[in-house]
Length: 330
Image 1 (cartoon, helix red, strand yellow):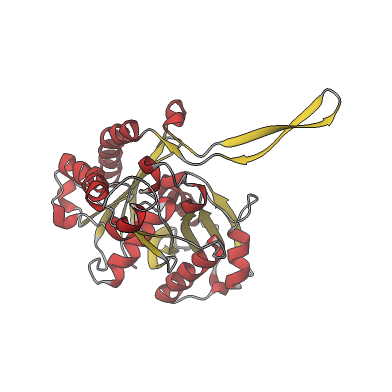
Image 2 (spheres, rainbow, N blue to C red):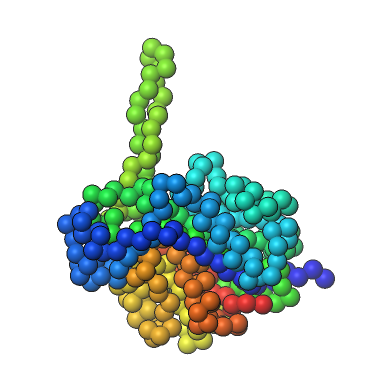
C-alpha cells in the first residue's frame, strides 16, 4: 500500500553575504540602534546586492535541504516556491528547477506573503496525501529589499532577504498533525506592495496602464493588533485538529516579524520563552523565508531533534495567517 502520510525530512537555508546593522541604518534614516531594538528586536539584516537573484539563494537553500534529506534532485516530483518577490513575474520556481537539475519535477510559485511557507506546507502535503507525489521541495524565499522605501523608517528597518527550504516525503505515519489557514481581504490595505500604473496612450481614446510597483506600505499598529488577536487563535485551532495540547509543544516557530509580537503570542499561549525560536535579531523580517530559515538554523544547531513537536505560524499581507503542527524528521 502506498504511503500517504507526510514527513518533513530535511531543511536548508541561505542568505546574502552583505549585512546592514542598525548603526548603518541610522545613517540612512533618523533612527538608532536603541530605537530599533526596543521596538522590533532587530539588530541587523542581510541584503541582496543588485547582482544577486532570488533563484540563486533559493537554490543554495534547496541543495542544503536535499542533502540533509538524503535525496537527489532527480527524486523530486514537485517544487513549490513561496515568494512575493520573484526574479520573474511569471514565476521563478522553474528557474530553480533548472539550477538544481530537477528535470522530473513539476514547479510553480505560490504567493501568500509572510504566510507563504505555511500555505505552501499545507498545499504540498495534499499532493502527498492523495498519493500523487512522493518527494516535494518547498522553498520560502524573498528579497524584500527590492521593494523597500529606504527613506521610510517605519518599514525600512524591518525587512531583510533570505531563503529557506524543506523536503517533504511520503511516509507510513502522518507527521503533519494539524493545520488551519485563514484570509481576510477586508484588511488588505494594512500591508501592501501595490501596483502603480501610468497611463500610456496606444491610439486616440485608447489608453492602457503601464508601470511598476510602489514600495511596501504598512500600518504597523493594525498589523500588530491583528497578529496578537488572530495568531494565538489559529494556533489553538490547529492544535485542536492535531489533538495536541499546548504543553506538548516542544517549539513555537512564528514568522519572524517583530520580537514584541513573538513574546506576546507566546505569553497568550502560555508557552515559556525557552521554547520560542527566534533569529529575528540577525535577519529581520524575511517574509516567506523566515520560518524555514529559523527552522533550519535550529535543526543544525541541534536544538530541534527528531520527533520534536513544532507549532509553526505565519501571518502577514493579504491579510493571511495560518498555523501547522508537525513532528520533525522521519
